[in-house]
Amino acid sequence: MNTKNFGTLYIVATPIGNLKDITLRALEVLQSVDLIAAEDTRQSKKLLDNYCIKTPLISLHEHNEEFRSKLILEKLAENKNIALISDAGTPLISDPGYQLVTIAQAAQHKIVPIPGPCAAIAALSVSGLPTDRFVFEGFLPAKATQRRQKLEKLKSETRSIIFYESIHRILESLLTMIGVFGANRMAVYARELTKMYETIQSGTLQEIYDFVENNSQQRKGEIVLIVHGVEEAVTDTEELDMERILKILTAELPGSQAVDLTVKIFNNRISRKKLYSAMLQSKKANDDRS
Ligand code: SAM
Image (tube, rainbow, N blue to C red; front, side):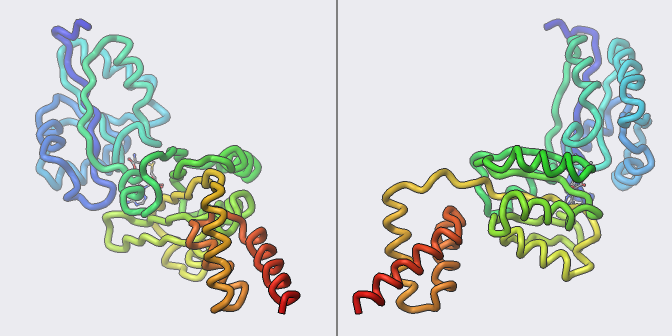
């Protein structure tokens, strides 16, 4: 690839709330480039002012991306270095920049990532949900029917599923998720990460719904919601373990509590309904024997 005499396009991650979450390299690049393309120049100016960076800004947002990208391409061809930033986090991750990167790549310009914050990864890292395999879904469709259809397609997803969600739709989305994934599916609600009212709440979808509904403070700010993937089918050995644990717990506790605990011990991998009827059957068999 011949990148001689061309400027470099830097894709620079910026903080998702706490202004201190910016890398030394990001500051160095933002200071040294000829131009910064920003989603909202007024918003980015606050960040740049905080670090006394005086580099000129131009806007690049979803409504002018095509036109602006061409202009940026011309500047790169004139050997100017350009940085792309968004309002928060990593550009292109539910943010503008895709068109710019694809046309800059097609024109064989050098594109350099300056990694840093991303709300999805920050939330995943503290979620306690499996991190070895995950899928990023970004924002669900705004319309209720399309949102449900999208969730239906994800019903059998085995990886952890990361969603960005607007505060105005969180309760509605949680209700639809309860309908599609089931009330007992484990999830994590991560709000206002890196900010003063940071909240990380894990529980079943129903527990998270109740938490948000009963706490008006939780209906403000920015949210990442991560849903546990569906578990792979239980093995025969696990099935035997499950029966044994259920038997021990049923001897000590009320039946429904024993069932709830067994479901929890096995990370919701078996339906409560199925386990409950198994418990009733084994109780009946015991009663018949005695
Ligand atoms: N590019 C950004 C990134 O790297 O995370 C995401 C931009 S997207 C337009 C904004 C969405 O990201 C918010 O609606 C919210 O879902 C999530 N988000 C951004 N900042 C967040 C924060 N501090 N805490 C929780 N979620 C956040």
